[in-house]
Image (cartoon, rainbow, N blue to C red; front, side, top):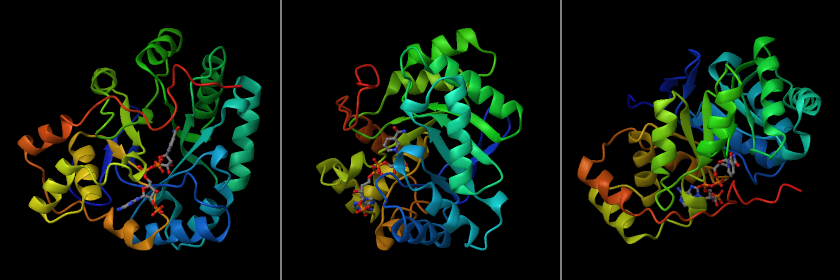
Length: 277
Ligand SMILES: NC(=O)c1ccc[n+]([C@@H]2O[C@H](COP(=O)([O-])OP(=O)(O)OC[C@H]3O[C@@H](n4cnc5c(N)ncnc54)[C@H](OP(=O)(O)O)[C@@H]3O)[C@@H](O)[C@H]2O)c1
């Protein structure tokens, strides 16, 4: 990865995706999401991660439309929610997301969770959307290795991206290795561990060493691991702080210190033991 805020990775289908962006889970619909996305775009963010489930797609679309930035310079991800899975329901859910976002195309459409008994049919719908040119890329979220393997055994089109919970306390080494081997780009959700890792002594010690905050140290660690990050903040100063990570490098030794923080601790649901009812 190079070191600029608007740098990209190339997905296996050739689409370029920014490796740095904003997540908008728990950002309120209406003025909060519009203002937050606008602040991020003004700061230089070019990737926005939303989902039907977040109930704020309208505001994301409005902020993009009124930003003055050409549509093709902004990468928009949204996701199909669990209750909409299956072939026909996914196609319908996609149309609803398109209407709310009020955009001509989506850059990346993800299956939000691997709902047992449904996600394979959902993937077939995503393939249809991709072949019809409605989305530039299709991918998955919260897929474990066995979900990815099952999907790849059945379909020729493999996911471009797997967006999973990933932070220093849940560094997912096996999953990252599997994805890398198969050309599936890993994207971290809760890259800051929902903000709960920011008092960790190792991260604070490294912050002092590099004149950075613990949040910036974590985000830089992700980038140096070739992981796409979408930190969420509704606080303008933090939106800017999280973008100040392109002017330093963590040494290999310090990367290893952060790797050692892993305790396989999830803050979100476990994809294998989630209740999808
Ligand atoms: N695919 C999935 O299933 C899934 C699940 C969860 C999340 N996601 C995506 O991933 C994105 C990020 O994950 P997340 O929102 O769960 O967690 P996160 O980005 O790890 O952390 C967000 C929390 O950290 C705080 N924060 C952000 N920057 C900070 C800073 N520099 N200093 C101190 N605190 C800071 C935020 O507070 P304020 O906002 O109050 O500033 C917020 O409470 C989501 O928004 C969503 O797009 C996807």
